[in-house]
Amino acid sequence: MRRLTLSLAAALIAAAAAAQSVPERFLTVKDQVKAESWQNALDTMDALDLEAGRPANQKFQPQLEAPLAFYRGVCDANLDRVDDAGADFETFLLLQPDASIDRSVYSAKAVAAFEQAQKGMTASKPSLARAYRQFPPAPPEAMSAPVTADWGKGPVIWLMSDGEKASWAKLKDDPERVNFVKAFWRAREPGDNHAFRAIFERRVAFADAELAQDDKSGARGSMTDRGMVFILLGPPAYSKEVESSRSSSASISDRSAGSRISASGNDAPGMTTKGGSDSRSELWHYRKGLLANGTSYPEVTVQFWWKPGRADELFRKDEQVNAILAAAKKPA
Image (cartoon, rainbow, N blue to C red; front, side, top):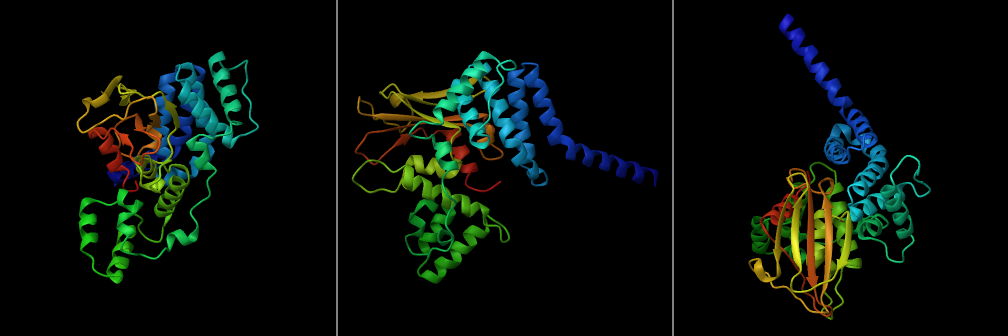
């Protein structure tokens, strides 16, 4: 009986510790920022994002979103990660549009990044992340669209496994296809929860509206490489166009390990860079908090190349990127 009592007490203590882990970690973030321990604070925020994503702790997420975005901005600015800081402060200002920054408390770097983000909020073209935030949810009719033989050729193809693609190709009539689609979504959202599909449909609609190429093919934005990455990973923390040439490179950087994996020009297997003065190149940067659970890379940058007037795009599909995209095919 004594052993049972001790075990029960230990379980209760562990449960209490788990219940306090989110607020405790948030206090740790505040202390680390105050101590100017920028990288440690970012690492703690990554851990806090994962902890707050657990079903029992999701009630904390709305409370954490704005302050964590602000603290990330402060840390990134002081680490000279200008683009990250701008994206962080922009996220914060979307949630707290009338907020200001205390010049007497925060560094000149943080203040400059904050004020630059404020100016950027009035720019004519919003960032992908901001545009997506302002994009409406998927309409109800998107969730109940009729199933046709073309369903498996549309943007849902980015979610389908090889086995599902093979099974779909063997179906002979619409009743079979309807049953397949029901089973397909049921496997990804147990019960009556349609949150996963609602996010998918919203991302598809956004990609079609914002990511279509300026070519004559009429290809949907959701069927481009950028559309595929957007559907699987969602909006990047920030995106930007960069000067493009045959020496352009795609890379994945590991902040914690300090390593960098990259490929340049035609050195990557199967990659042909569309260089030239009329080429366009765009970088999409994702932090760990934006990646699927189980992803081992703290941050990822995906680079695209394309030429105006052409429907095809290119981004580096290496082992790491493929693993990240595969992990995003199913909800956590």
